[in-house]
Image (cartoon, rainbow, N blue to C red; front, side, top):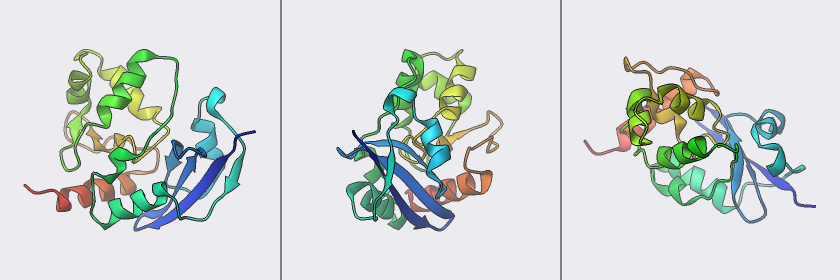
Length: 170
């Protein structure tokens, strides 16, 4: 039976954990050490038992490189999430194209998906994103420019946006 490796790395805003397949695809990730809330985000067909794994793989290296300033390194990491809905899956692919330091509003995000009136559906794609950081839902802001929500806390979202802003050439 396939298992998911639980890899945790320390960050300036707390521990970051990813649940990773043997092939190296991230199925869930977030700012926690507890695998249970992460596993709950994984679609039932993609769930598997979780085992601890020391940080040493490509996913951990990519997160460390991101934290060190290589903001594009996470783009190469494969993610696997499934909802059964083609719009949400498309929206997640589009979200991976939003560049660091260039956040968009929910309205702008809906436009990028090709459905400018689907603001609520775009927001739902952010809310149901299981692979934080790799699918950068933290780069989506309220229409008035406010932070909006973030599953891992507004302090984390604010730090991530500031980290990317300071490292992105103007």
